[in-house]
Structure formats: C-alpha cells, structure tokens
Amino acid sequence: MSFQLDNRALNIKFTIFEHFIFPFKLNPQILSQINTQYISLEQFKDLAQNYSVSNIDADIIFTFFQLALENQPIIERKLVDVKQLTLFLSLQNFNHAGRHSIFENININDVKYQERQRQPINSYSPLNSPRAKTMRVQSQQNELQQVIQFVKSNIKDWISFLTNNQDTITSQEFNILSMILYNEQKSISQMIFDRTNKLGREIVSEWTIKNIQCQEFASSICGFTKSVTIKNNIEGDLKISQCDDSMIYIDCCVNTLSISQCTNCQIFVGSVKMITSITSCEKITVCVASNYIKISNTIDSTIHYYGSYQPILYGDCRSIILAPNNSNTEKTLQRLREAQIPINKQCRDKYQKPLIIGQSKIDWSILPIDEFSKFILPESHFGCIDFPLILECNFDIDRMNKEITEKKILTQQMNFEKIVLPLLAPPEYIKAVYDRYQLFATFQAQIKQSNLREENQKLLQHAIQGNFREWLVSTGTIKGIGDLVKLIDQEQ
Image 1 (cartoon, rainbow, N blue to C red):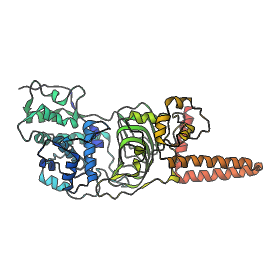
Image 2: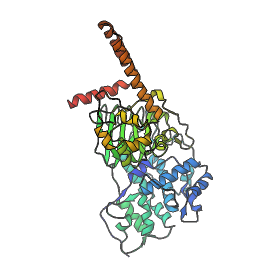
Image 3: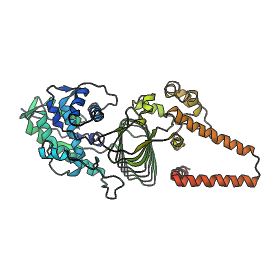
Image 4: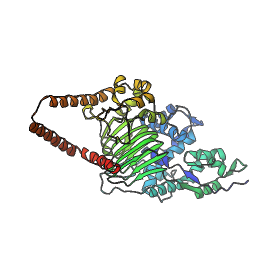
C-alpha cells in the first residue's frame, strides 16, 4: 500500500459556506433511517416532517443540495445519494458552531452538542442585525479562517461517517467530499490514492487536514465609501462587502454574487448564473437577475429581482420591499441567456411570492405600481433598448424575447431625450412608467402653449425646480444624482 504525496493543496469551496448555509436545525443522523443508497425529494419531505420541518423548508434544502452538488443552475428532480445529502446537512452546523466558537474542536455527532442545536435562538444569522451597534464586522480573511477551522474540526467525523466507522476508506468514498473540496488539476482522491483503492482512515484524515487551504473570492469590492464604481470584466464569483453610500454597477454575468454589510448603496448586476446572497445590509437598493436569491438580516431595503426561483427570506429582515427588475440595457436579454435564466413570465413574476424559512416573522411587501420607476444607469456606460421596440411587443416579455434581436437594437435610432422603459417587469408596471412619461410630455406641451409672459415662465420654472429639489432631498434621491454628476465631470 502506498499513497501519492502531492504538494498542491486541497481547496475548500468557499462559495458553499457563503451561499449554501441555511438556518436549518435538522440533525444529519435522521438519514441513518434510510436503508437504501438513494433518496427522493418526496421521501425526504416525509422524513423531515417527522422532525417539524415544513415541506417548503425541505424543498429548499433538497434544491440547494442539488445546486451545490451539480454546480449548475438548471437541476432535475432525481434520486440523490444519502451520504452526500447527510454531508450537506452537517455543513449547516457552520451557521451556529462555525461562527460562535470557531476555535473549538466541535464534534457534530456529540449528543450534548446536538442538544444545544435544538435550543431556540433569537436570530438565525451568525451576525447580529445591522441595526445593532455591536454588529461584528469581520474581514474576509477572518471568514476564510473560520471556514478552514470548521472543515478541519469535522474532517475526521465526516470520514468516519463515510466509511461507516471502518478502518479503511476507498477512493470513491473520499470523493464524496468533492462537494466541499476540490483541486484544479485532478479529482481529490487522485491526490492521495495511488494504485490502490483503499487507505487507512486515520492516514487519509491527517493528510487531508494538513493539506487544506481556502482561496479568497475571485473578485471583491470591499470598503468603498461615497464612490461610484462601474465594472464590466468580472468573471466567476463576486463579493461586495462593507460598502457605504456608494453606487456599484456591474455590467456582466457573474457566477455567484454576495452582498454583505453594506449601507445606503445602490447596486446593479447584469446577471448571476447561480445564486445571489444578501445579508446584514441596511438601506440598499439592488437590481439583479439571478437564478436564485436569498436575503437575511437586512432592513429598509428594496430588491428588484428577476429569476428562476422565488426569493428566500429568513433571519432578522425588516421593511423589505420586493419589486420587479427595473433595468434596461442593450445587453439585458443577452445577460439572461449567459446566466441560463429563462426568459418568460414565470421568472418575471417570481418576486411576488417569497419563501419564508422557519418561523421567522419577516416584514416584507410588494412595491406599489405608482412607486415603480426605472433603475437609473450611467448613460455613458450603458446603452438601452429603445422604447418603440418595447411598445411593438405590447410590454410582453415572451414577444420581446422573440422579436427584439441584436440587429434591431443596433439599428434603432436613439433620441437624445429618449424614453427608457424597464424590460423585465410585468406589463402594468412598464405601462405605468410609460404613462408617466406621457403625462410629463403633455404637461410640458401645455406650458409651451400657455403663452406665459417671461417673468411668469421664470416663476413657474423656479416653483417646479424648488419643489423637485425638495422631493429629491426628502426621498434621498439627490445623492444618486449628485454622484452621477461627479462621475460625468471626472470623465470630461
């Protein structure tokens, strides 16, 4: 028996801990009751109900397990491996153990530990509400250390479980850990198993612990204050964290998106292939197209969403406003295709019916039509699909998907004072924006036709401008306009 020493490390999939940890307190050992290798969604729901887990929660667990396993946004309901699902359930302990006492060697199979897990908790989140003055602000480096420590603390227990407490482990059993660990060059078993299918359990455990490392996010926007940021070349996973009073525009498709500990920010992201996670934020406005989205411990925020799955809310969320995606760029439909997000009415309307995890009392509402408006994007960086094309399709997303081609977008004549209509909202929302434009045009024409004397024209102009500025200040909208003006000045 021999094993291959490889200097290349085992990398932890940090996105698993960033996006796939939920406040579920479901003991992984419940799956020991299953006597077969595979389990279906319906079997899992029936089993989970015995432990006071709702069908909604069970569906979310099963769905996100498949997402984590397959790393693809489009999944099929099928039988899954019981051991892999058990491993995924054990990862949910990171929500409590991994954040509360990260340097303690925690055994998830310990009876006393599991008893503590069953005790009620005030907040599902590892962080306090952003309203709290004592909110713990952690650097990404500390988060990485927490993940590494959690994995190292549990490797031996996981391997014992995978081997059914046998003294040896096979390469196939070890590869089940591929949900958590990976290597760029080869399967994780190839790094240690060499010309043999079995190795000693303790040898493999010690080798794994010794060779674990965790990479930071491929792209990160962190600590920006009172700034305007525009990026169009981001690839892979993106994390936006600890930003204040800023406007962030991402004109591309990213794999995953994490927004955390941000305050008074406006954030636009073209599309997200997998999942968007928003946590511990306050007074932010987000416009995103994403296959999946979850929101936790966030207050006084508006989320404009288009996606494949209903929004998931949990934790200390207050005054959350869910709204249709209100963007319009010349690449909007292209970004949806890049992210494999279907273009249809079902995805358009997913924002209307969020899923609430557990017993959380979430204060959320749907944005009223009369408060809906398009997301303001810097015109110097973002083109748009002009309104005649949208009118031709009668605001219908299915027709827009078929009829608005790249050729039409490029050949459409643009008017300097153009009307910009949101693309991915229900017809009644888009029509409300269009009617507002029409009302303004009518009002403008009436003023021109009134033949006011010059001094009266000035009085009317000052009155309109004064009231408009007062409205901008009272709603906080003036900040965004001011920031965009600064951006334009910098480019000239």
